[in-house]
Length: 130
Image (cartoon, rainbow, N blue to C red; front, side, top):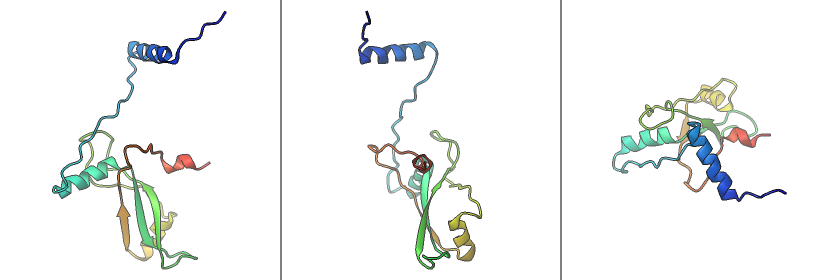
């Protein structure tokens, strides 16, 4: 004879068990966006909160030579967490990257960073590649 355990009971047991073992379950902490009048604080906030950026260059490669070309990059301003970022964006790039090759020819580029909507669950682009 087998007994079925309702799903809420399983969840409660799992939470109780993890708390007994000292396992911490991450809880999203709401962040406060600085007032838009404080431009420097907003820029540092965006630099720290956004892990991905789009950088556009003028392409030097066929068949789109001379046209705008954009790539997505992983960006960091320091370790994750509140108050630990510098506001200075860092990207680890290689000369094999197409955008880097474009920048070696012409130093024109533009970048975009934005926070995803709270309702969207984001994953790094590498997870979409099979």
